[in-house]
Length: 212
Image (tube, rainbow, N blue to C red; front, side):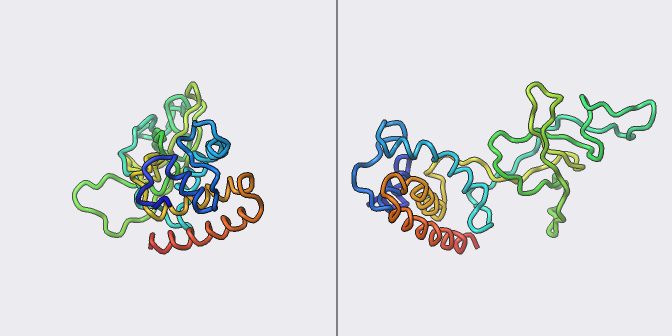
C-alpha cells in the first residue's frame, strides 16, 4: 500500500492511483518505463496535475501552490496620455484602456489577483483590481501578457508545482483519484472506472474541507 506521505515522485503518485483502483498487475517504476500502465499515465499525468492545480478543490485555491511576485514591466502608456503629437504605438504601448503591460510568469496556471506594491503599511481591506490576460502579437513570437492600470504591480497566482514532495496531502489524494479515473477504463474496465469516479468525488469533497 502506498500512502500519501510516501509520494515522493511521479511514479509514486501513479502507484497510489493503481492501488486505489485495485490494479495488481504491476507497479510503475517511472513514467518512462515502457509498461502499459506507465504509457497511459504519461498521456494524462501533466495535464491532470496542471488542471487540478488551476481549478483548486471545489473552487478553493490550493495554498501550497500560491506564488507572489513583482511583475516585469514590458510596456507602459505615456505619462501625459495620448495627446497629439503623442500617438498610440502598439509596439511600445499597451492596448488602449490599460496603462501597463507586464510579462506573464512562465509557471503561472491561474492569475488570482494583481495588486499594488505596499509602500508604508499593509492594506487590510484590499479592493480587487481590474486586469486582463492577453497575447501580444507585436512580440516575435507572440507573448502572453498581463494588462492592468497598476504601477509596480505584484501578482498572486497559482504556480505549476511539479515536485510531489511539496504537494498538500489533500492534493495528492485528489490527484491520485483523478489519475485513476482517467486510466481505469483501459486498465480495469467499466466497473473500475465507476469506482474511481466515486473515489474522485470523495477526495474532492475532503480536499475542499481541508482548504477551508
